Image 1 (cartoon, rainbow, N blue to C red):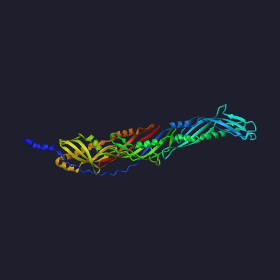
Image 2 (image 1 turned 180 degrees about the horizontal axis):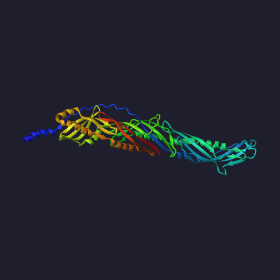
Image 3 (image 1 turned 30 degrees about the vertical axis):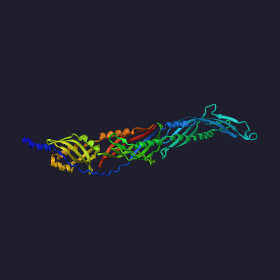
Length: 461
């Protein structure tokens, strides 16, 4: 009995909880580094097939004209066109069509007004024709349309008749008259009047609404499926020159945006802005986002507990088991970590360590040591816990692979980038690179410097 009484204080002492006061936590925010300007280049493809079909419909299939005079040559003509053959150039719209005409003429060498105030031919008129009762005379016509984008995000076009070649001349041998130039003059006048009709059809393409849809979509937060929200926060936009996909009959241009993206673990109030005036365009490809990621310390808790909960550290017949860890904040850019443990002793102690991100995307805590209060108490109550090997074991487990999280985030962002913005307007994209470079500690959370790059495209059908 005496022996048991002798051991009781020892047993009671070994089970006694260790109570250590909390360390001082800094409440200041760090000065974040100035990041490079984030740029987003969105190639835009506009299917012109519908608009080109409308151009085809808007042009009359035939028209007629005449020139009547008493003295000299008078004529009537009929012009008929074939369907348009759209042949886009790289930097402009070019399209050709075949046409044909017939011509009826009459000739009077001299008129007098003795019997008729309008004039009467002194001899019977000479009548002739070409393309009447025989194959109509053929012509080849070509239009060219220069296309640009206005500051208000609309198409501006200028269509010109570039080709009018008479393949079959109309020479009237009976009175030695070549009517080709007259027909060309008359028909070209009619064809040139259609230039504005063509411009109206192409300028009716509502590109501005689609650009506004893209701008609004980029202002919406992207839900990163439990890991926070990505706010791109676009600031400016410009559109590059228009070119054309000759094979697929599409207009091609690139919208270039600048942005100030942020990722936050907490959802923030979304602010919307009007589509800005165009800035000066510079050529670029894809997107490159440089982001300050603001996260709460709770997100580090989740990562650390995955590796440390239940972790056993044996030492000279004794052991401690890590029950949980909790990040309280920081001291001079070092994390303060509260460790709850049980085993040969139970209670809590506090560690401080320097966090960093490795090139291969691992979160690492280095230089782990006990804070001042923990050192003082442990030296008095459980000196063995203060042993260097305990810290080395904890330090080995304070390494966390971020790659699974980054890969999952890449997939989530890619899914967000592939969506239908409006009827016939589709946004597509992918994330090719996502990496974290630095970490800084604040009062209530930490900040990561992150780079995200990839490609985006807008397709209008």
